[in-house]
Length: 120
Image (cartoon, rainbow, N blue to C red; front, side):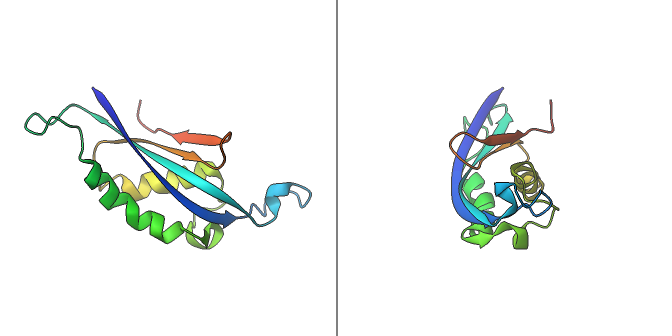
């Protein structure tokens, strides 16, 4: 079993209006997001890889283009634009295109991140 990762980044704003007005995340603010797509599986024998990095990019790049320099509250329509929901959104958008998709790791800042991994 192998684990393959590829990292992407985008800049975006969001707010969490469900939080109290005194919470700093209630207000519109931005992040330099990093997203790591994690694929897992056995090697494809004739190729000696789990998945082609180009295949990952082909699936992820259009999503990054949708989000880059946008207000996530207007693009990701999954309720609140928490890092958890951003990771879930990426997973749902990629699961059909990348059968070896295992997890999505979203980093809002250098020190705050979340990993969505629905499979054991």
